[in-house]
Length: 361
Ligand SMILES: *Cc1c(COP(=O)(O)O)cnc(C)c1O
Image (cartoon, rainbow, N blue to C red):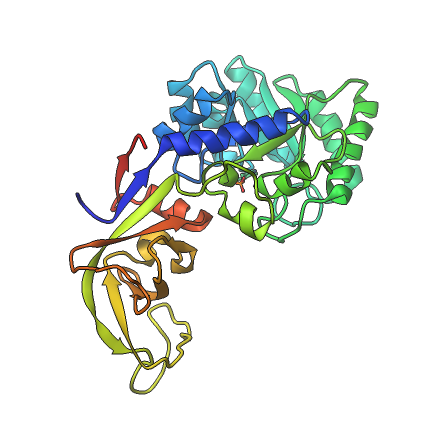
């Protein structure tokens, strides 16, 4: 085996995806499967397709192109507002895209007509999280009316993104506003909107508490399907059957010894120009692992699986762990394993320097 090694358990992930799809469907919400967080690994995408997801979504067009090729019968959705420079590929590989700029919508309209297609658009409203979307209500309604008369475009619906930048919690107020926006646009257009897309994993707590405002018809789910640990612990949503061990990252021990816990000499800043946090706990047993920030993005987003293992810090290529309280007989050349939070999944799945293996169970 070559390390670092990412173990992928598609059966476990499939079970998460099945449970969450059921929770959505029984409340009249259609879940879209977001595949960008795990670099659209085909085994995981296949698990989503197997349990019935019919729309695959990503912010990255190469991932949508691959999904389209593997599953021509399914719908693809682009999650990042289109770059004006990519409208050709956008129309080619995404059936649906999230949009907010009239200039880009014009380009998409022209390109769709060139390709003899009708491109579906979900117009994004910014309800306070301050990433993408139109902030002003009247401008939002006006742009919806504008899209409606574009020959190459079909206004499929409206949507919102929350939490990602501004940390705003989806609630009855902001999602209620999105539903109200949909009613206003429907009044102006004189027809129903097919999709009112009420956010991502962070909207699940509201759904599971049965507080999702009426009129929300869709959620775009990525994180919760693969690494639901934040949903379970941080968001307080334990859902029987959900598990976080569909991905396990293994790293090899390259040094094993006892050292002081307080750096010795004059303190400056660490490898990344930051002041470190060090607690003097005397001399303790520790291990140095051959994995680092380059592989996982942020070492605090790793969850040690072996008992008594605590992460002390990391540089680009090394991870330092305290194993004083670990009862296992660890050996040089042995491995320690970790579950992942979203950011560590994001980095490790797309790293070409991490080996991947798919395991049945
Ligand atoms: C990434 C993304 C999602 C999925 O978010 P998760 O937290 O992984 O569920 C949904 N919508 C948009 C616009 C995104 O960029």
